[in-house]
Length: 150
Image 1 (spheres, rainbow, N blue to C red):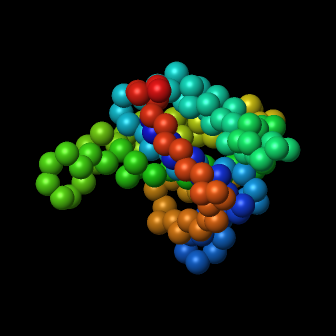
Image 2 (image 1 turned 90 degrees about the vertical axis):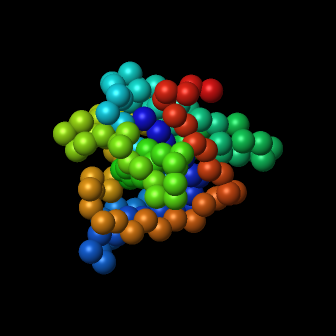
C-alpha cells in the first residue's frame, strides 16, 4: 500500500461538479492499494499518518502531528500511485488491486485512521472521476510505502 500525504490549509473533492467532501487544515492523503496488501499494511500506514510530525510547534519546528493539532484528514483512493514506469512511456497499473480487494482495504484504512484521530475522516468516492483541489502548506509532501518501511 502506498500513500502520498500532503499537509494542506484546505482540500476538497468534487464529483460531477459538486463538492463531495472538504477539509480545512490537516492532511490530504492519496491512497493506492495493491493485490498483496493486507490489514497489517493498513494498520502500519494509518498509525504512521496519524502520528507523522509534520506540523509546526510554537518554535516553528515540524514537531506536531495531525493528532496533536486536531487537524482534519481527507483520504482519496488513487490506483495510479501503483503505477510502474519501468518499461516504455505508458505506465502499467498491473500491481493495483482490483476493486474487490481494494475497496475493503481502503475502507479499513479510513476506519483505522478515524479511530486513531477520534473523529471521522473525509473521503472521496472509490472509482469515481474526482476533481481534487488543495492548497499544499509548506509545501510538505511525503510518500510512504508499506512494502518499503523506511
